[in-house]
Length: 404
Image 1 (tube, rainbow, N blue to C red):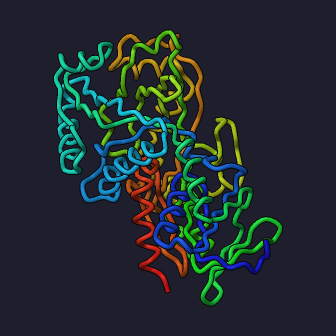
Image 2 (cartoon, rainbow, N blue to C red):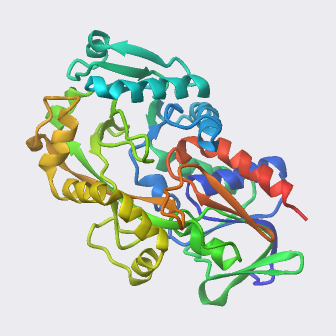
């Protein structure tokens, strides 16, 4: 490709969000010249394909937040998209279980949020009805969300890639952005071997590397991405009948993580997890992976140490979880008492790109920022996959608002 080639838009990142953004831009301007670049050699290389595959209904998110606004809309769009393209997406339902009376106020707050956010068919159930829905589960009360479902987000992403190509966009894999510079009325991206592309605008959906691209384009360093590894185990095949739908605990409202839960998948597996362990590489799918540049960025960030000062006990607990199958089982057994350590087998690890402010606070909403001729997705953890089609529309709105 001629290095002087000019595009209307270049989207950085071929995960589910980047491809959804490219699709949305092309739907609004069918004749636009759109390029999607991805540093990996395939789409859905990172967060999109390394998660539990849950289509969230919108229960958890603070009313008024972008997550609250976009999750319910995004889930509806996603179910419709899967239906139109023959992608298996199942509304298997979810229970969020309070196992003791002390958790009921937090369950009340989740119910309030869910109703405010317009979560379809959400309802409170008591201990007896909880047992009817999940015979092997136990608790004093629960929220039941029939609208929550499961899908293979990798399959969704591959279909989006086909949509983008069919609409006339170009997709370049193995193309890592090294530099971004504004030149007059265009933005210039330098990639492998000095290859250069120019576009009127860029949209960066770079996930685990979002902060670096934004800073390279002139945005503030704050917030910074810290990589949290979510480790999963799975139930032995003969023990999968312990679970019918999704079973979650009442989460700690002060953290953006949902705790150890049981998750049936489209492929028939039942996951148990994840843990949430700060790791030494942004691609630490294996726990021992260490990349000096990633470790340096984490340790040099003041927010890392401020976060650690507040949450060190939680960190020690997560280390224990990562090291102990018995600890995983004990957590799951709080609401499914039949789960034992010997029922669990290794599964996989995923990475969560969690933005952390200089003040040490974990950013708990989607965050967009802007530099000349570029829109940056600075924080898009769960439920970004569920919300992707709705979030893509919001990003396209931002692109249009910042044109010129």
